[in-house]
Length: 404
Ligand code: HEM
Image 1 (cartoon, protein in one colour):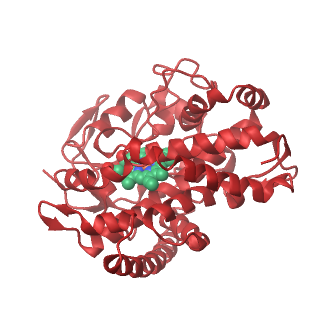
Image 2 (cartoon, rainbow, N blue to C red):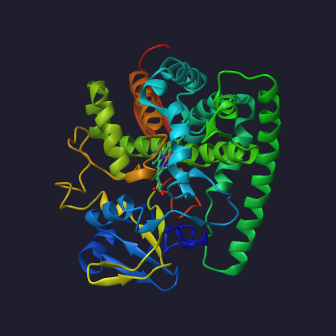
């Protein structure tokens, strides 16, 4: 049975236990405390259940027949991420084709080209604003390519994607109203922009996702313009800030742990496992959310039908019962079954793409730059989205090892 789409603001509302900058940057001891003392708890303030243990987070994400994804934050429309079966399967089967590991691997030469161009632009200075110069444009240009929109508009894309995933700074009605207003404007701007592209592609199809979606059918019906727009907007919202955070969180770790930088620079074959460990250790998305479809018993607590549930993958990824020495970063960790891309039917569609972009980004960066360091005197701020784990900017300095 599907539930009526409910408004769930818990994921964009900061948790009171993480209300300082220090705690946001290092929430892991607090998650550990919850895992030990109160692994399934109801937060009266955010009106949701918080789930902290690996086994339970895995359970919630796997059981879509108990926990629905049909929910809304502020102003988003109907998209894949917020659908339940059977509609979810129909849509997912359709868009999956463009995101198979094989299709994505074909993008490798273009991703490498973009990566090297971005690095080339900062090599002489021997410093860069990691997000502005590198970690933001890379995924934005790749998605712009996939959708078939001009890469020159990337600043606009970045602005829109950031607003679409933004949360509130405090749990007050004025704060929600302000974000709602901003998100509505961003959606309107983006919709109008993409609408023009859909119109052009209908007349003149190309090799891009929008053209492919225009010609595809679900059960004999063509997708509506609105469905195509929603999916394109989801790609921007789901794929940009997450990948930007993955790359930047990896660079943070390389600068925080100098021995790691040495280890991986000396052996670039470690990059794929390092990327998985970055995903586990500093997950760009901290906690997907659900609505209970029926009453569910979990660790002696009863989650009632209609209750909001936040599944803390950032906590699950540090659960000692699953990961030995969970608080130690191990670039060669294997196995590494982190839950950062989710689990079950909503498992991240863009995971192969995010992994490939991060792999190429680190291989190229570490083969060209040594001694990556946080630029002295930099003040680091967190992203204004409580469900994400990332920083607003991360300036670094480095030395050049070889010419590009
Ligand atoms: C490091 C980067 C990324 C992370 C950490 C991430 C994380 C996630 C997570 C946790 C989910 C599941 C959410 C849930 O169960 O409610 C998800 C779903 C999704 N992601 Fe990603 N994502 C990343 C990159 C991308 C990229 C690059 C794209 C596309 C270009 C993308 C597109 C999607 C889509 C379309 C869904 C919805 C899938 C569905 O509902 O069936 N993601 N992602």
